[in-house]
Image: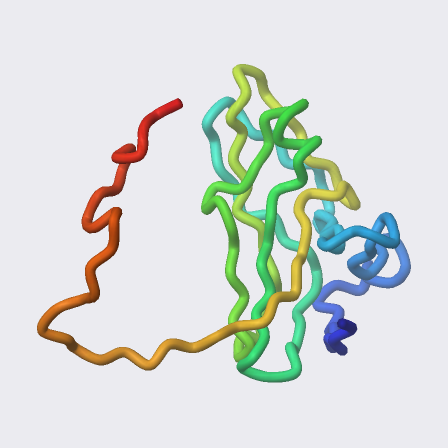
Length: 152
């Protein structure tokens, strides 16, 4: 399913030095987001930084959200991943997309301008209708959680 997403360039580098988000293969679920900054940013071990992408987006409606996901190679090979696990961009947010990065390696890591730092996934959203209830239906699992099914 194709979804039209409007992009506003927050930086004049977008579309010239830094491309719009791109899907690297025909089967890619996430479009690569790139760092849009003037200078490299070096993160010490366990240090966090908010990395700008130079873009803002407009999703077509409240039935969609954008998710910011880590790039698996960057995380597994360099230890650079997202500080918030998954970023959520609501349909009514119009500010610049920034990526909360953290260095989980034991060495300094440098993010350079134009580097692919995360992936943007457009996803459908179901909104819940919440109501108080006196009880919930019974299940085999019940209230078991946090390792209740085993750790292996």
